[in-house]
Structure formats: structure tokens, C-alpha cells
Image (cartoon, rainbow, N blue to C red; front, side, top):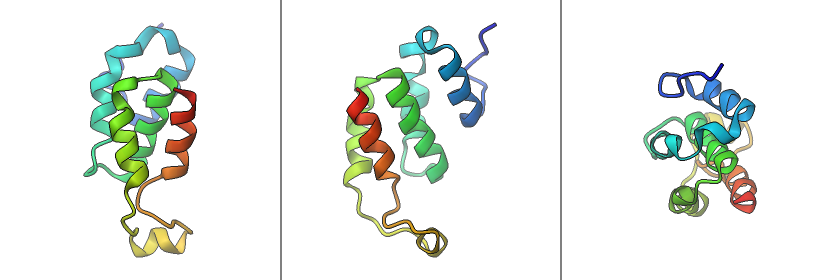
Length: 99
């Protein structure tokens, strides 16, 4: 049974795509683009990065490069947790290498 990916929360969306990678493909391109928007929480952007890599979406590459080159400093809490930059750039490099 395939879930309705339009209504899934971001975390459940990743699990669904991992279970059925070939089914969704380009149908999720708009959702991934939305998840990569700068105003979304970093957790959602990270999920968008994972989905772009899992689905091998070439149209997400400009957003991934934007995230990778963003050198904005994170907030205090993220700095205390060890983050050097606001965006999850290590994950972007991993996903870009799979595309």
C-alpha cells in the first residue's frame, strides 16, 4: 500500500520514499522544493536535502548549492550543539554526490 505523499509529515515522507523509491519520483519535486525554502525550520530543510538525494532530483540542485554556500551563522542553541553554519551543509555534500 502506497501512502498519499501530499499529506505526510516530512519525517513520514522520508520513510515512505525509502520504502517505495521508484514510485514517487518527480511527483514530489514541488514538495521537496518547498521543504528546501530558507524560511522553513532547519529540520525540514534537512529532510528536503535527503529527499532530493533519494529521488535524485536534478531540479533541486540549485537549492542544494544555495544551502551549501550559505555561511550564515546559526543561533545560540545550534552553536552550543556544535553547528558551524545555519544550513546542514554536510548532508548536502553527501546527497549531491549521489545525484
